[in-house]
Length: 353
Image 1 (spheres, helix red, strand yellow):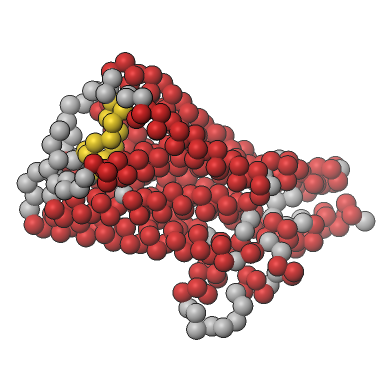
Image 2 (cartoon, one colour):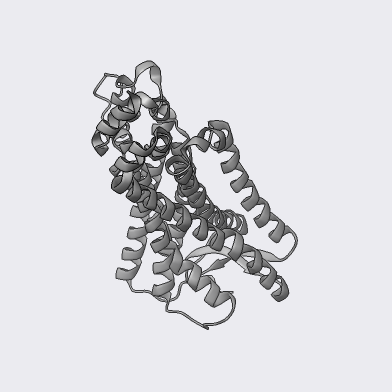
């Protein structure tokens, strides 16, 4: 298999390499800041943010093990590294392909339970159980990759069109088995779960805004089911934006991979294949901006980290009594304040008199 990218004009070389280096640096810094911010601030150590950190770790692994090698390849024009580096890069490429959709689905399910099935949230998404969910996803994906490689079904090789190393199939019969597992487990199931969860979330929000008053007047029990804080709405919206961006960036890769694996197309212009790779890299780069742009707590903490001249305690810590987290504060007192924003204060007073 060829390891060369072919003839390219100097302008193309500079544009491709510079673009990927910029994406690499921004992704590295942005995702590190997200992880460090949550680690540094007790108020941000919530179960939902744990899933955000898990997504950021996946993006960070791409910025550390995938993008730098691809940047070097785009500069030199061919693969000049040993098989060891190809195996490392290919492993993390495939790992992110499997893990990212599953983490998106888990995050969507977290939001679904928080908004729609609030009473079940402490039982399903304690900090300990959330860690177990995340670790299980990573372990299953890692185990599957290693089993396929060590069983002799797949090998990791350089793919010039995408400028990355990835898995190739050594046995035609095993390819069918592989995709009969991967597509339902790592693609279809996450898409179905994510779509269902956000459909129910936005349906609940719509019903909440439209029918909360008569529901509250009917019974106080109904009231407990429709309490939705403004903070939870913002978190759900920001994570939904992440899902939309993820789908936009990753669906082209899935489509092309299936077309090539099953030989439905024989060739593809190099610039199209490379553009698909850049979309995936862009997905890893843009997520930190979505988290910070739509979450005031993240913005405050990142500002405090990037502007250390201020010796004051981070705002998010100073504004929370006894170091409580957002989820601990999202109890009746905090919810009552948020409900003023949603226009249901009067209904709440009626049911608590």
